[in-house]
Image (tube, rainbow, N blue to C red; front, top):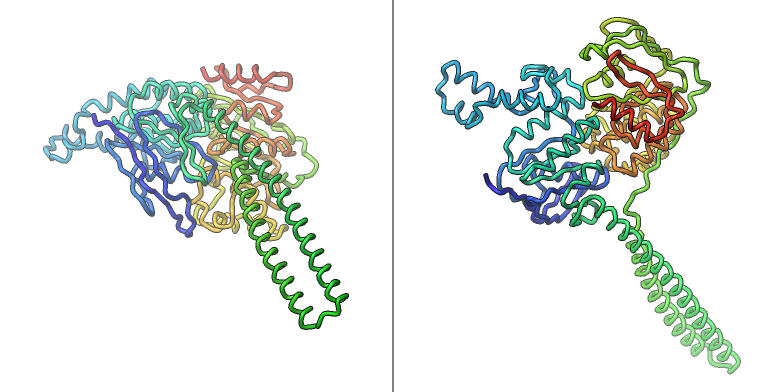
Length: 554
């Protein structure tokens, strides 16, 4: 087995619209388990694809030794693919079948190599993940987001790669699966790069590398060390900003006093000349010299002000490492109806028997958290409520406007720019106001003009939220499926604030307990051996909420 490392040598990348995403990156990724962090849109996924060889840099080069396996952040299997396809072993299985049928083609033997027991390995891995109901030929399209991610992670495990690059691998995973992932990676003895905002996962890394507008910076410790170092950097940057502002005020005061002295000297000279009855030509020359001197002083002071202002701007840029994300409240949807949705003996498709049938009444201002293990039917339930799929039996009634932000963000057209899609649903606000609101989400002018499919996962989510919540007619029922995925921490906090003020009915499926605790939920909908149970949570403390969630995941 080769010892793998990945090296960046002067790597730059320019987006199709001409914007430079990052430039002149130099870094070595070795056997240390490394977490890559950064704000949404900073270029983490692009950098991961360059490191894996899927994308070529605009300038510079990436040097790779050993086999590299890359797991993308968005696992979206097509309907015509299978579990084996998603695990990356379908080609090996096909070659084995041809050999068993009598093929002697060298290409088939090259594909198989020493993986003659790959089907058994896949079966064992599925069993270890609690996915015994799946087999290699199971259609991948019927998997939940969590199940698809677990199968993709099995593919990474079976790849026998020397270096793994995992982009947001804990997305969609329940707590049990997340803990299993962390434990597996902890015992992984080869190269590892994890792109994540999951602090629980980052806590087990050997070092953290941050990608920002300033480039790449390595911190020799786990996330706690990184957070402490960033806090100290922020404190130092704020102190430097204060010093720069103070120096600017002092210098401006000194320059003002200088100008006043110069003006007084000039005035005295003019008065003296007139009192001495000097010839006009002498007075004019004196005035010219004085004006030249004043002009020179103004130029020198202007240069000094520019230098001081630049120092303040640089200090402010260092201090403002967390871009402020602002989400406006959506328009008031009006008086809340008594009920907005009703499920009457609904049977959910592609769901285990225990959680297949559900009856549910959703009030106009009810706030429900969906907590369960992967594969119990959370996403399917939301799709039925949204009218995306039909139930196998029973009746689903939705009496008001509904918006559904699913895991794939199908609400966005990947071919169209964000601004145009927002304008299509908001005819009230001016283009300038819409641009401002998108900018407050961290979506600048170049990003809102490009096809939304080219945006990062976090940026696409912000764009989808804008199209839903800033619409002329806001939804009365908002369905969110793992919507804290892909978001950096400041953006998650902004989303929490917005959802807290949302005045319609809310149903949120999430494995992020901290996120759910901030939403002022009225109820929890959890699965059990006898089906779904709706539990009021007004009286529950945060620790009790976590205990219920963990219990449902066992």
